[in-house]
Length: 276
Image (tube, rainbow, N blue to C red; front, top):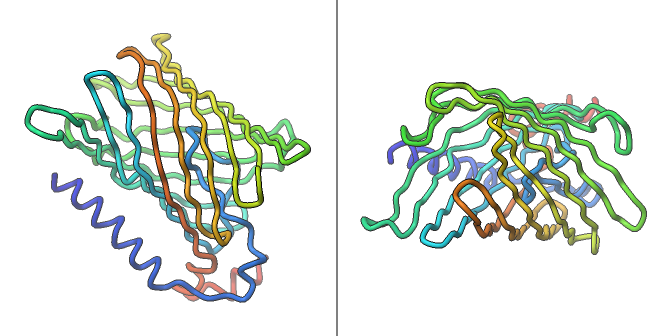
């Protein structure tokens, strides 16, 4: 419980500092709209602007007959280092098994550090971006891998007329289970459309394939709603089938970005502006 409490305190402290140091810019209307990794399973191909700081949060639930799981805060913290590179940190996530005889059983998941790099543009054979990650064994004893596990994600995107798009993701991870490291492949395809300048709808298929040939299937869909270009609300519903049976998936999230935040905080604003 102490590690879970520490994770929540860290996330809350970052959020407070984030809001307290909000800069005001007349050029805010010129910045690109927020783009997050939520609520799809596969990552977005976009990076955040250089000098920006973005925090993505949410809560999810997996509902099955006789078993309900919930998790929060699903926080991903992103730092825009340059126009082609960002650093990221996934904070500790609390996993709650609801309906237990003694009340909710709470465990904490491992954290992860990663970098995301821009590789190419859309509609090319090369991936638009890539994510290199490393999980950190900070979770509860019952669910931590107990090891530093690497992962690699490649993300393609195809833009079509009438604001339609398709994102293709190819991911591979090495995860330690019961002391043995096993590989898993996580491809996904998400198709969607910008219904309005502020609303994007999507549908997605995201299986996870283990080396023992077992497959977890996820089919989901949802919407992301931006407000003022720097905030996003998201909703997602879906279906998952794994070795334990069928699950109903639900999630809700809130994300926000602060442009030039790192520059103001550390005095980098002049240097960042000169590199644009």
